[in-house]
Length: 171
Image 1 (cartoon, rainbow, N blue to C red):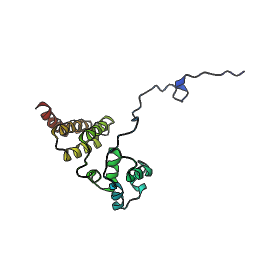
Image 2 (cartoon, rainbow, N blue to C red; image 1 turned 90 degrees about the vertical axis):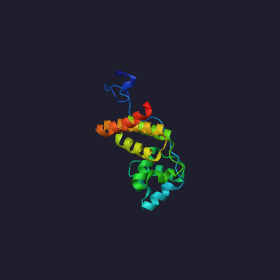
Image 3 (cartoon, helix red, strand yellow; image 1 turned 90 degrees about the horizontal axis):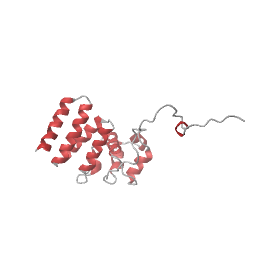
Image 4 (cartoon, rainbow, N blue to C red; image 1 turned 180 degrees about the vertical axis):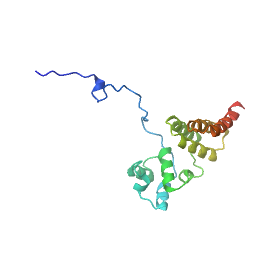
């Protein structure tokens, strides 16, 4: 009778001896952003792009279609991608009075810094600062932007953002 070797449960997946490093991938679904109905399709058609050209392998054509038809809400990341590809500002999709709630935008900026996407964190923080009038939200955005700038190797700009945030928090 042949010998059967028993493997530990962790070895059955082919990861023998590789340790168990925590995954950096996000678990679960991202929170969607409310957008102006029809704005994604309008932007795509005005830019003369197909669903595939907007998606370009970063996300699926089906995902773009679902966002266009209102069957799903795009994440901030997806909406920024669509805005970039269609050459439209984020405000085009959000509407003038339907702008992203400051708390949700801050959470997205914080997430971008946490995952190391510092350039996009700075861009998102600058966009939030351009449209937000609330001092506390602006100070928090500057704090996250300062962290991202320092991580990008731009300590001068980071210090300026940190100083502006500190002025609010110490007042």
